[in-house]
Image (tube, rainbow, N blue to C red; front, side):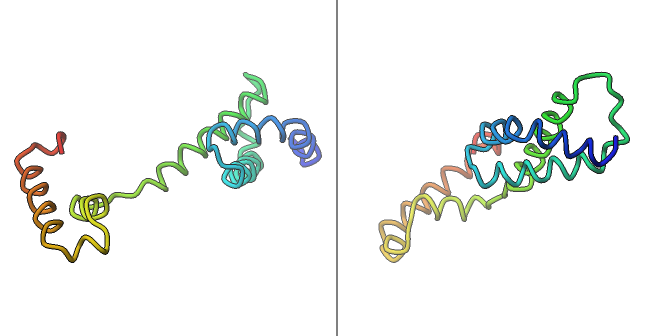
Length: 118
């Protein structure tokens, strides 16, 4: 596929892909980023397109894969202690004895459970 054909693909499918990305992300800015990344990847992967399916299906598959990759990158792991402190106490409550006792009690109860239940 030649570059002018890529421009034709962009002109033809840009709005459909953008709507699809908005549907996936519920965020127009993130959707715009996904759209851009999709066409960058299309440019790199043009030689791999075999034409066995429709071009539109191929484009939407690339967009979905990029979205899934970005979800994995955005997934952050938080330690249990940080999570408990974030949801049970805030800066004002941390200073009080009652909040500290509640936090210790919840942590103790969680330690009694297996990892999956926690």
